[in-house]
Length: 227
Length: 294
Image 1 (tube, rainbow over the protein chains, first blue to last red):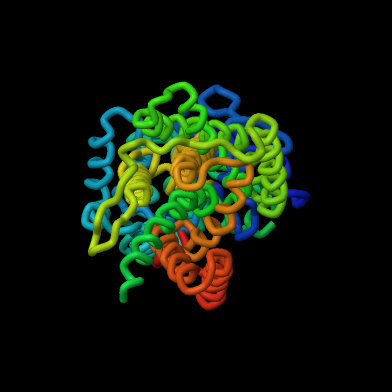
Image 2 (image 1 turned 45 degrees about the vertical axis):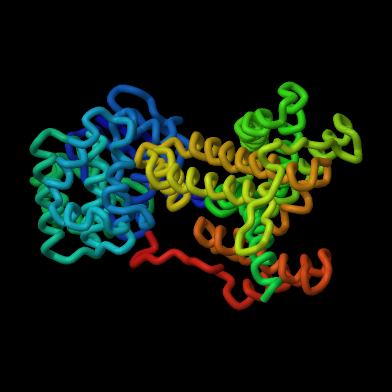
């Protein structure tokens, strides 16, 4: 569904990604140490940064020059790192933002409130006052409301209490099983490899290994990450 | 005690006019962070719009109600033009924005001088604004009451628009986190344009109210721009309720200082007070409370 081909990109004069290619697959995990370029790759996939070279193709269409909101309109959704929400808006308003302009608006919101009951409990509370785990659930719910074909998740379990981590991992597995395409950056290698159909290992902005998920030995991936 | 009620009422009316001038800025400066020094000239455009409407609709009873939406749209379109042609390239360059918009303000002032007489043009008051209302033994001019009512309507409309409409939600989201808004599917460029249109349009409405009090001339925007910025800053950036309270406080302070001293000294004293307040509380009257930065 999403293909990133020979991507070179960075911030100003600092090049972060050096000719990265990510193959198309139902669930792709991007693995690597901090600073390897994983988040930059996801920001590029959703359009927050533009590549200096390379192509981004989604669902057969070259979307390299499209703005993030245009990519969302085409069926991509993005959950950024760090449990980001619109802190001054209520939980419900955060969800309404994603649902505005869509048919079955209320049903879309209700479906996510049912998926994450804690959000319903704090529907009128400002998102900035929610716990980290609740904010991450809100971020995922906001992304899912857009009924995406591809869900891009940047370290969805980072810094979250273990019980909520389990819930989020279960949600990702359910979505993948239901046929949603997922591009996942995750430090928890065991879970990422279990969920992924294919994986890509990044080190210093270079792809050091690719392979099929599940079958890959964690030790092999760890060795590739160290390169 | 005899002076208390009249000055409080006068000050409230002055505060309402200041609030009208600052309301648009609370969007473009407070919400978007754009230092638009031409905002005062959009107020002037609103005032001249009222004059031009009166050239078409001679009956002032009708012309002023018509002039309000016309001024909103005309000033809003000027603001939109400024955003599309200049501001959009300068969102992360506040100093450049300030300098460029000072230049735009001067161009608009000179353009007004070319089109209208240098001494300005009168805007006729509607008959329904003649007369006074007696409040606590003080005859309060209806014109002042109208300014307060207009400010209240604009504040209520703006608050409701920001809080209850999808556009309002999108504006608040874009202000809070532009990247996150984009990746939620919001076209932040459209939101920028819309916000600038509404902010500038509100300056146009303020211009109509100002024209009823002091007439119109090419320099009139300059006398509102700095007080309006001070009011927005003192209220707390992006905090509408803070802008309202700060405008009222400055208006009342101006009225009392003018009563005790002179009109021009009152301006100096009131704004020294605001500057001292900002030294003590740089974040303004109200601040944002969150558990997280996001």
